[in-house]
Amino acid sequence: MSSSHSALVQLRAFLAQPQMMPNTKLPPERELAEQIGVTRGQLRKALAVLEGEGLLWRHVGKGTFVGSAQPFEMISLAEIARISSPAEVMRTRLVVEPALCSEAAVQATTNDIRFLRECSSDSRAAQTWREYESCDNRLHKAIADAANNPITSALFDMVAGIRRTVVWGRLRPDRARPAPDHHSFAEHDAIIEAIEQRDPAAARARMHRHLASVERHLFAPDDRGRAETARG
Image (tube, rainbow, N blue to C red; front, side):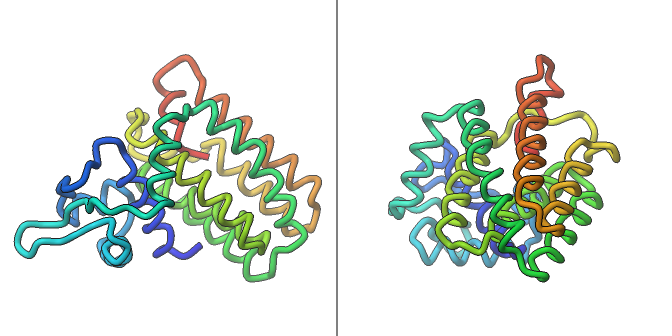
């Protein structure tokens, strides 16, 4: 998954929030880029795409605004997210992502695996939680894409979009960035290793174990657990 596509997914999730009503003015580019964890260049490309789809409109000298005409896909995403809970999102992920990971172990190319390693490295180097979330999203998307099936990739995109909309703006830890021993780092590496070794059973099991770990953090009784909702 390219950085440009990641920025586009992040921006779509931002716009799917309930308060993003037609004609709502977006924050300035610098502020918006920081909020969704992308560069200004990546943001501008994503804004141009959504403007072309009729999701946004711009007024020179005044800013960028949410458009009133939304394509069917965006309306569906917002509506499903509105009636969904984090628990339902996690149950869906536990069904979908282990199966995609198993497929990736069979279908992934050498370039796919190389990109997975890059995503894992980038997530460890992240300087903020938003930056980490962007890397994490990109890694999970890359695993789905490594199955090399456009239908399952599209299914993943829908679930991922709903997930990010449901959890947007939830609490985050006081730390500015993930701790070096953040549970996802080792879990991601184990998943990539199974894919690289062409072991679909291990890939499925390790993704399931990873998501179960994410689920435990999601439903932890304290604020720190709730802060982990978006990450995994």
